[in-house]
Amino acid sequence: MSLDSQEQAARRVLVAGIYLADKENLAPRITRELAASSNWKVEQRWASLGKNKPGPNLMPFTVQVTDTPLPKFLLLNQILRQVNRNDYEYIIVSDDDIQLPTGFVDKYLAMVSRHNFAIAQPARTHDSYIDHRFVEQLDGIDARQTRFVEIGPLFSLHRTAFDYFLPFDETSPMGWGNDFVWPLLAEKHNLKLGIVDSVPVAHNMRKPVAYYDHGASESAMNKYLARRPHLAKEDAFFIVDSYA
Picture 1 (cartoon, rainbow, N blue to C red):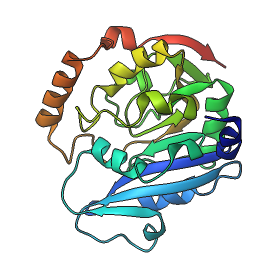
Picture 2: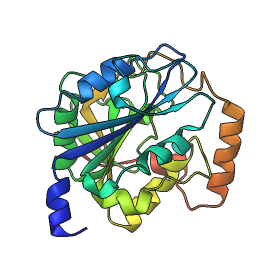
Picture 3: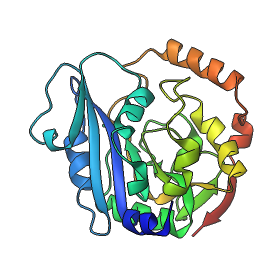
Picture 4: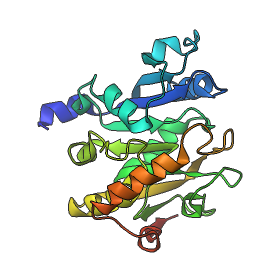
């Protein structure tokens, strides 16, 4: 990216999100909080998945309506193909069932920027559904450099990672397994992964895997990982450094 392009992208954030239109969701609250940033110009592009039409609160942010089931990372790639990713400093990927703290974008990206995390996520609150305990909030620290960033419910990419991580690999269309491949790819290009503990999100509205085929996603993940260098869990769940 040229210096002029970098200057134009500075302070711009793209949110790519998916909400389940036929299920209870928190997308109206999420979009409202993401739009409230004082320090960043936030553009939101969401895909509606389901037969119900987008409500008036979500219509301004909805760029795609899909009434048949499609895997998450295929939808994300469709959203991202509609924009020039180099117009943004960060891309935030969000699900529709999380509770964001007030001032989330400004507080979260301040930590991400301070610690130079190219790929990052907020920690999950203690009362969240948690697949990997490693991502649960660690009390008493601001953030930690890690070898693992989970594919959901929210993560961010800095523009230094775009060329290496985008478009997302669709071999595992739900994205399962990406979080064990990403660390090696990041290390190859001298990029840092991290978790922000001081700005956690709550993920306790819907149980994970409640509305998609767990078996099919797991099978796709296993095939995906079999063909790509990746970390084992015992190597991925590792704190490189912590910041108080």
